[in-house]
Length: 129
Image 1 (cartoon, rainbow, N blue to C red):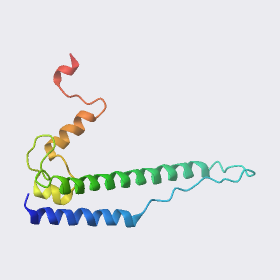
Image 2: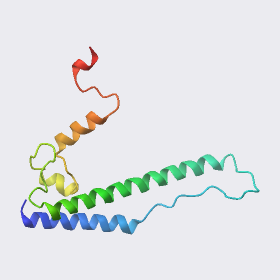
Image 3: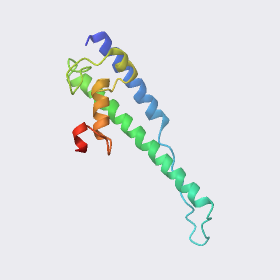
Image 4: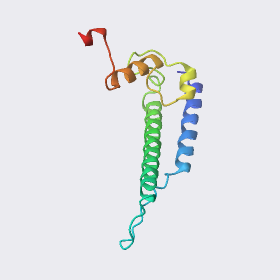
């Protein structure tokens, strides 16, 4: 990959990382901690659902930050290999890297991996003999 393209993608990753860090964690609402009062039966499910949503968003944010850090590390440690698919060693298209600079797989290998990791996914016709 050309140094100019690598620098532009590095800047893109750094901008996305800064935006995610500035966004911060989604606060997780706590259930009433008052030991004396009885919890509201209508409020408890809403609080639980809000906690799950906030927790999922925080997990997704953490995963995105980790993927960005891995991409930045690859750029630093192996700039010649950045932009190559880790599975098939073919170049990842520039348009894909602009959209997802942390991508480590080409679209075909990514789709193959996602299909293989789906529970109950049929991989081969012979699976049903």
